[in-house]
Amino acid sequence: MNRFARIFLLGSCFHCHFSHAQVSGSEPVALPVVGIHYGGAFSGGDLAARYGYFNRLGLTAGYKLKSNWSFGLESDFWFSDNVRLTGIFDHLVDDAGNITNDLGMPASVLVYPRGVHVNAYIGKLFTLSKNNQNSGILVQLSGGYVLHRLRIETNDNVVPQIELDYKKGYDRLSTGFNTQQFLGYSFLNNRGSVSFYAGLYFQQGFTYNRRTINFDQPDIPVSTARRLDLQTGFRVGWYIPFYSAEPREYYYN
Image (tube, rainbow, N blue to C red; front, side):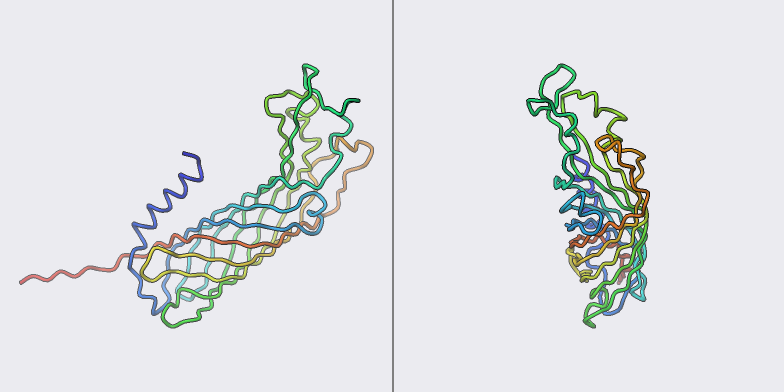
């Protein structure tokens, strides 16, 4: 069983144990909330010169107050196969158009955009119905650490020029601070197991190149200027709210 399957299974167990038919919804409640989400993002700003569309898979863990304010942590792992950079390995290509391995045979070199961010967030829920005051329009602001780079794979081949630390000369590692805004709808079910949220987000990354040289451009100094890496996308998530148990009454004759 892979890691994500174990996470979903564990979340299902928690959800069934803690959140079954225990809130009336007639008034806001305070409770811890864990969420698993998927999203997609279109790149903009300086990021668009390197990469295109990203898939994003992440986790959220926080606390919702009775005032319908919330706070917590959220993290996304970004993955894609959409690379807009060109010519990175042109200087390694031989006259036959191949990159060769350590045995002189044609090798396959693959590159994938990868990224991650870890943010602290604060949010506010604006209810739409008196029947469920734990659901409504959700607005969140967050900020934290962001990293993105190229993952370089040669599979079963050994290409000495791009193995081990040599990959650092091509991966375009960039890190820095990011801010993010989310606007969507949040639904915490009063009496069922389906709780979710969905909406749009906008992310701004204020990053810097962390490599001092790009091996494919050795004569061009790596920019030390701050980058503006933008993403605009959507997110859908499954909530695992931890409702407190209602007291049970027993009667004896």
